Image (cartoon, rainbow, N blue to C red; front, side, top):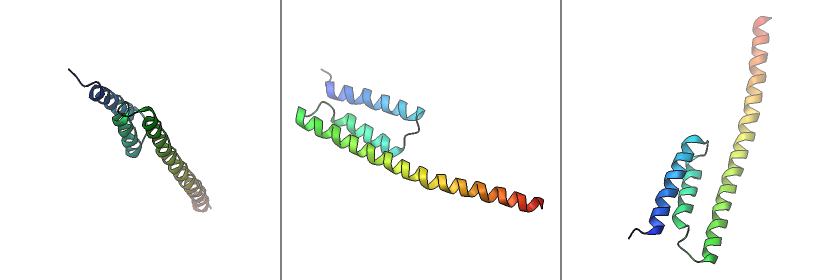
Length: 93
């Protein structure tokens, strides 16, 4: 008899790995999703809710980190663009 949990975990892992290749998710996010799939269906309702909430918190933290990086690198790109334009203007003068 095939263990239904290990079968689900295998299918979950294959789907996550296929999705990761098509998305821009990081390796941290991939690991969070894989860990979530390993815990699904193996605990009672209360524990399951805790695992879902924990996964959501981890993904929210990753989202906030991505937003922080976007702000930081966005400002840098704007400054770099302005300075490049200024450099070209100075070369043309």
